[in-house]
Length: 127
Picture 1 (cartoon, helix red, strand yellow):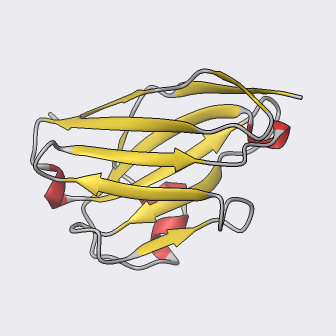
Picture 2: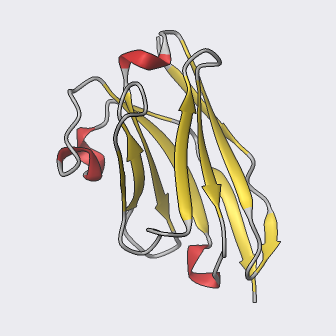
C-alpha cells in the first residue's frame, strides 16, 4: 500500500518562504511521477507542480511558476516543494500526489490522473 505523508505546512508572512516535504512509503518513489496540488476553501483543487520519476522534467502552474521549485530525492523517497515569495493567495491545503503513468506535463497537471494522495498540509500566509 502506497502512503504519502506531507509535512512542513506553517504560518508564514507575505514574502516569506516555506519548504514542504512529502514522504513516500510502500513503494520506491522513483516508480512515480509526483505532483503537488492545493485547495483553498470554496475553490477547486489547483495544480501547483509536477516532477518526473528521476527529476529530469518539471512543470508548474501559472500562478507559481518562477516562485516555487519542485524537487525530489529518491534515495530518501521524498519530494519537496520550495515556496518563495509567498502571497496571501497561496494560502491553502497542499496535497502531494503520485502517478504511475509515464511523464507528460499536460497529463500530470490534472488531479484526476494521480492514483495516490496524501492527507494534506496547511499553508497560511499572513498579509
